[in-house]
Image (cartoon, rainbow, N blue to C red; front, side):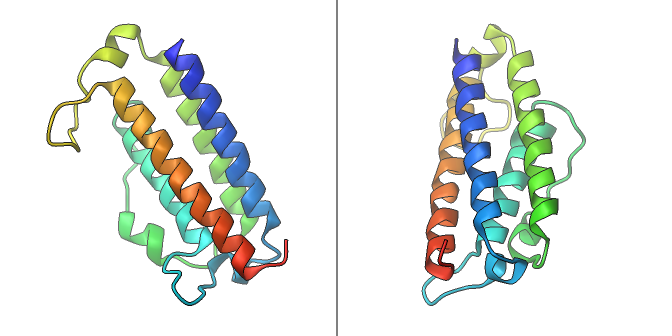
Length: 149
């Protein structure tokens, strides 16, 4: 059941992320900053995609993805249609990788520790879901501050 729950929640977040990107009126507003806002919606989208492609794609799915974390925050001007395609591709990859995991893999320690104490793969996947949700909220706030939609 855990795989189904994770897939459902990640899909919900990817749908919400795509909805946020669509609501930006143009590329400039997606990368604009307001006082006190240090990351744009476009860059947060790139960060979410980079994070999931790294931790789920490369580490679990062996996709060969090579993360360039600094570029997630420094790259500007990627159009909404490109971001939306990358969202769809990443969503599909996340779903495929999660659904290929066995129960044993879900309960095994996550192989690339990011916490001081070992955690299970299942725990780490829920952590990644929480990370995505956090940044999704930031994107929503960014969009509402900088646009009228």
